[in-house]
Image 1 (cartoon, helix red, strand yellow):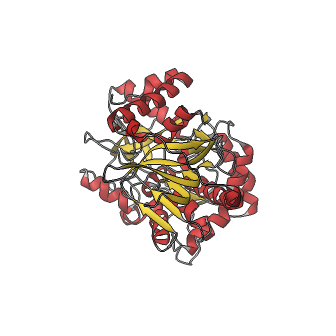
Image 2 (cartoon, one colour; image 1 turned 45 degrees about the vertical axis):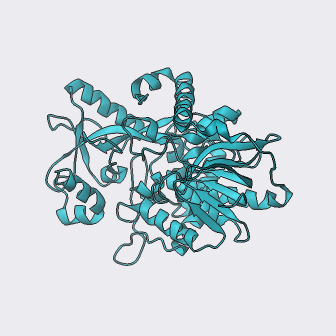
Image 3 (cartoon, one colour; image 1 turned 60 degrees about the vertical axis):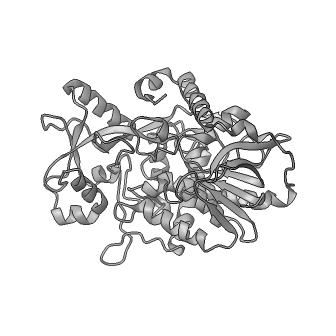
Length: 437
């Protein structure tokens, strides 16, 4: 790792990778992640990625997104996302991403909750893995992109009210400053702070704590999406998500008496609330999700990953309902940005789940997350390229001894984030924010 780069990207999920790949190959780029390169939330995404199939669907796609977001969305951000969809998905194909196709070779679109039509591209039930792995492979081919694993961002370097780089802790334990003309935060959400989450445990919202510390504008940090259907398990660690597309393809939700109690295609927050209500009513830790009656070979072909995981847990998706429960899944809020992913601090960008340009409003529409992350990562790259020649490298040296106690640093970060959520929405905090001290 050098001491200076043109751009530092913190995070190796789909949006971070796409930002790096969208920058000129003449730029020296450092990408860091606090875990393995592949261990990002976007790698886990099952359902798919939305696209604009044809111009005639624009208004319906726009309305579906706004309706799911309770009309709190930024209309300009929604417009940018939908208009950018065809180009971004074409680029994914150019990187080798293989979307499922019908027998005649036409793309096989699916539909998920709150969508008015079939407009979601997918690769079996592991779309995120397909997209992210191909982007990682492309990044590893680039001589100008350096990827450092098990490297922790501990602070932002701020000089004269602009971001001049980051403080990192390397795998060796060495703490050092790394300067950059631009920094892109792509650290995902904050699921690691919750007891029940579909996120990797190391995704703990570090960027939000640093933003709060440095007075960088945050937005809607309490807009946390609870996913309705996570496979119920008493095992510790990340919950296994049962994709929205399972319900989109006809699965029904049943209570402990085997009765259907909700329209499965309502927005996630509504379905989650109904499940929680039903669980309280029946004094149960879960409800059931059933595909029983669907052709068994189709289930195994359409949802191979989910089918195998359920088998590992002792459930045959083809023959019996599976137990599911709601869990923290996604953050609609984050570091406030404009439609070029620029934050309130110069030369600092936030993309994917880390940034909040208002595209999701109060509740994300299924399969808009991968699309949103990629569209605005590409727009950030365009802005970074445009501004690069006018930015000088930072020079200020700081006292690095303040970062030696990582455990205290971690606890302080968690407290900053939870206090911010509680300040914005005490009811949500009381209902969902059970977290380890």
